[in-house]
Image (cartoon, rainbow, N blue to C red; front, side, top):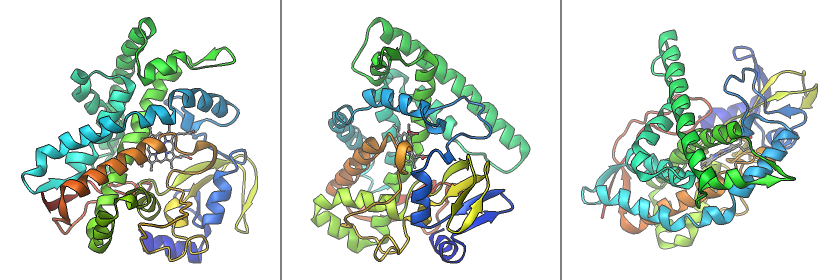
Length: 373
Ligand code: HEM
């Protein structure tokens, strides 16, 4: 989609799309302005059937909830996971290493984030497959374009959500009696001015983590490997300088961001890029276009594994900046480090790619590669 973004950014940087009844914004400066002004650009969704989550709250409620969950989601809690992330990655790679080929999506990038979040939440290993099925259903798109297919998808999702809620409720009740060293226990204990999270808020938050964190991290890992196979010179450069893995992950978030667009709704009339947007309008901020704006990034269409600084908006910006960013970064860094150290000559093994069928997501359904162990 990137050549199209470029054209739109140059020709119609702020435009109204009649078909979707929504505004589109493509320049870095304009996207940045939108994300840093949550009073004028609300995160509420028109049809909020599932109930509010952190992602769809506005201030001051958002601030309160975010402060509470920050207490549980600390950088230390995340960094402590590094050894586990490494051993899970190694175990997953053990299963394919002899064969000299793997599907990055299926064999590593999908299971890794699911297992990590399950452990972080305190889901026992015996329940992991059950948990994976539920979380897959939660993010599964529609198969086909018929109304029946859509209705079926919604029904499956609702069922998975109910079952997940019941499951987390059971964990929650156990942790209430006997706290453990996991996120659910920390969320139960988190407190600001004597106020704690309500049971329903914790349940919804746990589900949000699956929905917001799993597929995005899958796509980040896959997009990074994809880039390294598309540009073997960069693969060699990073191989020879492992300290570049960190900046390579950041550059992937700029160059191939898993989330390419972020939605908002105006709460008042506002002017963006010389256009007047009326109150109550949908606005889509195209991070995928902003991240390649030459006004902000030198040589924006070149992947520079050592780009610094790199103020990309792959994790958003402002008050809703991705809560899971430290976790996603850590998982992607560890996955790349271990792949590069155990596997030589990562190469793409097929010629056609199946994109994930969502205009808001940049990723592929499978990514087969070959390598030498
Ligand atoms: C918010 C991207 C991984 C949890 C966001 C936002 C973006 C984003 C763009 C901002 C949305 C907005 O402004 O409306 C990503 C990407 C990821 C990733 C690209 C992986 C590469 C994760 C993970 C978790 C997570 C692993 C949790 C385990 C959240 C939550 C929010 C959020 C809870 C809402 C924060 C708030 O509203 O205050 N993410 N995310 N994300 N993300 Fe992530």
